[in-house]
Length: 322
Image (cartoon, rainbow, N blue to C red):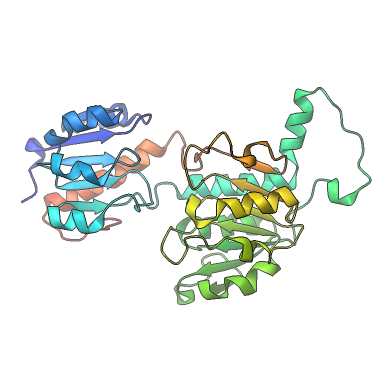
């Protein structure tokens, strides 16, 4: 039996997010605790019936979670959770899918616009107090998005909204999804993941918004990058391991594609030794695509919905994983 609300303890575990104050503002009366680091989590985890967490989670915490019945992930990605171990321990798991649809799709569109309008170059020139003159070389000028083709790999919630944003800029949008029968979701056409290599050469922008699965791990690699136009751009707001990072760095160093906007990486934080840091045709953001002033509230709304379902004894959760 799931504990009644009067007996429930919720633990918010995140190094930065302000879940406690946002939750307390709702006046639910539920008992909550908040931890900011692994050591504190280990000390307090035994008190928790419900855990709200993402990056601090490691599967070796399960033996300490003696009361834990439900984990609400803070992130849409759930590859850090051992699903079989959760099932064995009787712990339910739900993702935060949908909480960052607006944020991540807008971030991807921002990266596309920044690369098209050469904003990093403008910012660098501003720092040097350098007024760039008129440009005769067409390849070095700012560009327009109208008529360009965007390939969205993962035309789900985030990818679908990105497609609709791109259409507002008069772009052509090709979607890639596991099951094309799922519909266009804002794209002009949709193809299966198996058709990725056929579709990449058509794209001026390749945007990754897909989940990390065995099928998507490393799908952007030396072979697929070689199929991109020299004038094209890569955008990654999915998971870092969707790309083979060394292959991306090599392509960028050789100027084989025009640029990249990267929010996620194979290892995070990105190593100071990575050549990507200093490449003028690369924009790096620190896995911040999903972070907005509304994010805590969006996750808490999912949490409360799932607590209500668990309290009613329902077997199906919102964004259920386990």
